[in-house]
Amino acid sequence: MTSLSPVLKQATPVVVDHAQGSWIHGTDGRSYLDFTTGIGVTSTGHCHPKVVAAAREQVGRIIHAQYTTVMHQPLLALTEKLGEVLPAGLDSVFYANSGSEAVEAAIRLARMATGRPNIVVFQGGFHGRTVAAASLTTAGTKFSAGFAPLMAGVHMSAFPYAYRYGWDETTAVDFALRELDYLLQTRTAPADTAAFLIEPALGDGGYLPTPGTFMDGLRERADRHGIQLIFDEVQAGVGRTGKFWGHQYSSVSPDILVTAKGIASGFPISAIAASTETMSKAWPGSQGGTYGGNAVSAAAGVATLEVVEEEGLVENSRVRGEQLKAGVEEIQERFPVIGDVRGRGLMLGIEFTAEDGSPDARTAAAVQQATTEQELLTLTCGPAGNVVRLIPPLVVTAEEIATGLERFEAAVAVVTEAVTTATGS
Image 1 (cartoon, rainbow, N blue to C red):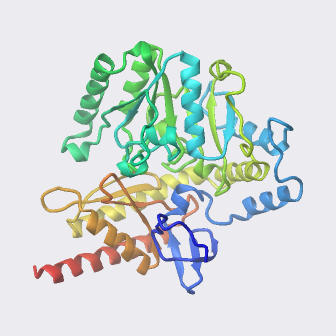
Image 2: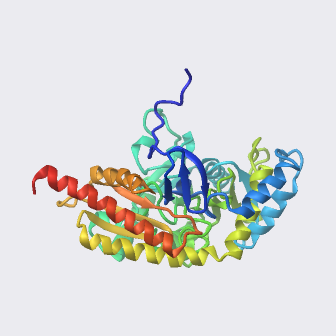
Image 3: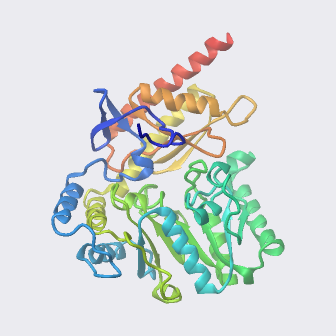
């Protein structure tokens, strides 16, 4: 009997029957509040009527129109719609299928545009699982171990992870920028450096917002040395952080922007955006792909961006995110095992730590499992696996946030009580 690969491990035992909005209804007859959204993908919630209607209509017109062979209308419409929200000057777009593909397209473009070989990434970043993307990923060894050699030309610099260092944010940013300057002096000369690649909020690396002052510092150094600044907005973009793009918490824009996940509410599509001048420096034949810019995915993308605008979902992300964070901070006061609560908008990380300040992955994993029993779906992340992440859809209501908080606290209480009973303390 054929089965799925044994290496694939589900975070929950749930088998979906159907889903709507913020809820997944399982074949077990239970209804689960979904604070995973397919790892930040179903931005407009599950099966938003407008997105469903757009996809259904497109399926009846044409499913696959390979866009370097024939052009299709949904991709033209999506490009126009993206132009309304992209940073000024990023007026040229290339489409692929996944975040990994888009990241690889971005570094390929940066190398071609600059004629330089090296890419600087930042500790804790996640940029994908394909070989080149995994070579750029430092969120954990599980993403890059076991299939060496990795792609050459990648250098890692420090990320301003203030909680890990035990510092305030300013101190952490100053340290990380000094380390970057030192890297440029000792490992990759500016004249050999094609790009800085960073997430405006770390995803798998622990749901850490990138300080705006750090992004400002990257922009200054990129401009000074002629280095391309790439923002990986695969998870942080499309309203997830309470602004349309995660980098908008700084005063700067990227040279190349990467987007995917929430852009089409679950349909696979990704893109990079750059200026026409930069994009024109890509070598002929270096951009393409059989399934990139799929017509059905593009139609869903247009509908998604319309829903985000019409329903004020970026603002809803900000307001509901403040409610969620404040609620978890109240829970933190009652449960000291929660060491840090951080995030912007509906991208919240909850770091569990032991009494000595070390990462407490066991408790985080137990809480994640316990939330499922409370009919709340969550995930873990972070290099040590000690961060529980909450990723509600952008359509989540105040009542659903309140319900999620109740269920999360109940899960933490169950786990901490079990630990207390086991230790007799």
